[in-house]
Length: 353
Image (cartoon, rainbow, N blue to C red; front, top):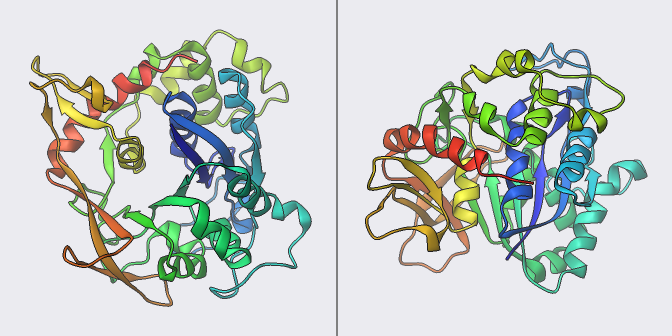
């Protein structure tokens, strides 16, 4: 079973509802042992307006996603611990952030504690900035080298001329981790500025609509209703026990949805995206794949990274050299996007808390 720490820039109300949607998977997949959720949030995005020239954000105020994590613990009858990350960016790649308020030390302290107490190697998946991970590394590099099996990073652009959103949240953190000796696999989010389209070295794909949510478990429907509709109720657990409101479901089920995270869950759990003999598309565990299934080919390729101080980077494939750095590649990006539009819905409707 995969031991996992999930670092996510999950807010409530959401900044990107994909974070709420995505966090269901490590709770639901039976071969993931979710040890900890670190809520990676950046202070300026808690405010009513974030002052950023390229990504203005008029949808605040918001806070770290304590409510959605608590709701998932309630729905799945789990007690996965969670902690808040430092709220401000690092001042340099070697910053240990020793003078931050104790409350903001939760995520880093819990990450180190979880690694220390684990008898098995742990994977870390990062969907957001790398701040908590970088600070933990700066405070105790020996522990991370001993206990981390692999870091899976959803960030960056495969173009060296563009600094992607998750990197821009804390460039020093990204620089620190990629320049470290830690084992990591990078799953670039975009192929370049404004390139919201499938690409070989890019995990982005477009989900045409979310109508399959109508066939999901009712508790998870309620969870997604609460998230997508930015619900503000004080009884946020009792809300999970109510019958789904069809009008509220339809308020978002017809939307197009941007997705970046699917590749990490498939690769990390050794699943395969396949076309079955009947023409249907599914995401299957290795022992569910039939000889007649056509597997969509992806690769985790060994490489070297050159990381600039801005967070921009270049990579060079190095098949002949020993390395613990890898990058994700898709053989058929557009074919995979078409297949995922059916397969991801089938996977989510199979989740039964």
